[in-house]
Amino acid sequence: EADILRFGFGFHHFLALSVDTLQFLLFLYIQQLNKVSLRTSLIGEEWPSPRNRSQSPDLAEKSSCHNKNWNDYSHQAFVYDHLSDLLELLLDPEQLTASFHSTHSSLVSREAVVALSFLIEGTVSGARKIYPLHELALWQPLHAESGFSRLSKTFSFYKLEAWLRTCLTGNPFGTSACLKSGKKLAWAHQVEGTTKRAKIACNSHVAPRMHRMVVMSQVYKQTLAKSSDTLVGAHVKIHRCNESFIYLLSPLRSVTIEKCRNSTFVLGPVQTALHLHSCDNIKVIAACHRLSISSTAGCVFHILTPTRPLILSGNQTVTLAPFHTHYPMLEDHMARTGLATVPNYWDNPMIVCRESSDTSVFRLLPPCEFYVFIIPFEMEGDTTEIPGGLPYAYQKALRQREQKIQIWQKTVKEARLTKDQRKQFQVLVENKFYEWLINTGHRQQLDSLVPPAAGSKQAAG
Image (cartoon, rainbow, N blue to C red; front, side, top):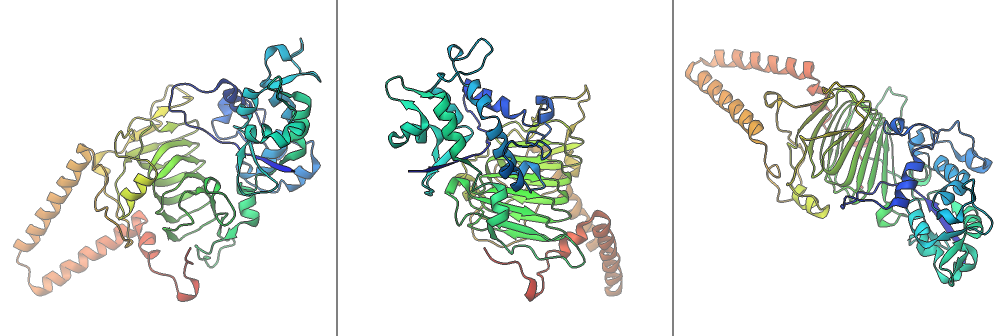
């Protein structure tokens, strides 16, 4: 039977303090997709560039996605063009010539093909179920094509490479495919007077459970709030969203936020990684297994995480703060994603590739600047407080602020104002509050909570 292979890059979190050597070699190799240094790749430039011409014209023609990090066709072209190098990298030394190249008789070990499953997986005859590469290659009906010998327990380098080249295809569940042929979601309304149109798509109707994806691009000047089965367990990709407030209140598999500006993201628990790249003035509120950030400026992270946040290269004025909100289903969603309240390393980041001796790339939010965040939507559920509570210094700051409010209320009450004086006083307070809303930008946030007109409501789903 014919089989269809696809490939996808992924990052695996290893609980033990060790990694598979062959997989690590592949990981290092794919950092050179643009022939850049590993240091540069950490900034987020680890994907192939459209200017790198593929040896495969049909793949190059499909490479029309403007965001190269999302361009599955370029990824496929890179693996196709460098397949020989990838396989030679996995060969045992005795299978190489003096110049470190393979020969027509070189043999590939089973361990090498298992390692290659880090990059390649596939299906049989277009079936829905996905298998790692080594399971397909070791399947008895495919031995002749994959070059596996039951006697030597190895693969023929020549046959294995030919089989992979014949069967390798694009990722049918990747970002490019989701944008091109995924189900369009009318979650966002279009803002009048803007040329950019919000694009939101998903592949949950065709993708296996572990490959479900939601792609969200160019949401502009609005509040978008969803708790949906479409989001549950999905990989969420958010791109170029500006001046918006986005609430995704479902258990998520992973989240990537790229090139967004002046926005707030409130996320349900993220089972694996939450990564931000090239964002300005963003606030992110989330419980996640891993946070990593690169090339950001002026971003604030209210995080609950059992691992140290990774601050990669290119960041300026990162602010870290404790997780400070809740919604009724939060603890249930945390349980579904395997996240607990301890340990919590939100305040102990790891700075990777420090660019200078300057240690001010991040700061911890001063307690005097801390306020809790209220999610303004009604939902069913049992969570009524912030999971794990707040660190003592922040809880103390809240109590002191509450005491000041009580003293203020007492002072107003004891002033014994007349009815007219109370009205005048109320107008003065409301005017000051209105000025504060405008000066801080919170006016837009409140206005965007007003439901849109009936004809432009966000669709369910």
